[in-house]
Length: 97
Image 1 (cartoon, rainbow, N blue to C red):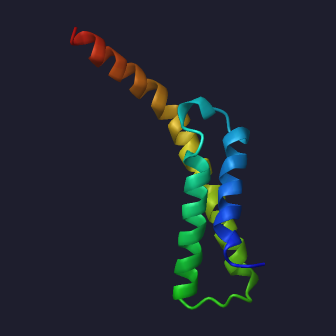
Image 2 (cartoon, rainbow, N blue to C red; image 1 turned 90 degrees about the horizontal axis):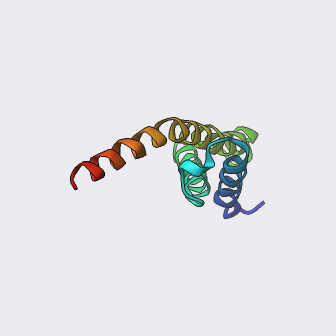
């Protein structure tokens, strides 16, 4: 597998999680795929720079688990926090009239 596909796989994980985790109306369409791609690429670069061998299965596994964890946390936090913040902002905007 070429290394260029790692961020694409991270984006695919993020896109899949968008439809698996409830509360997708609280964030944009591309947020989780973009976060997954960035997380995978960052994890991959950090592991390569710290000396991990490309032949080890752990580098592949951890580079694909990282977006799974990050996107899951982001989706759950946004689903919990965003509606209350939107409501608070709406009250602020209506109070200025």
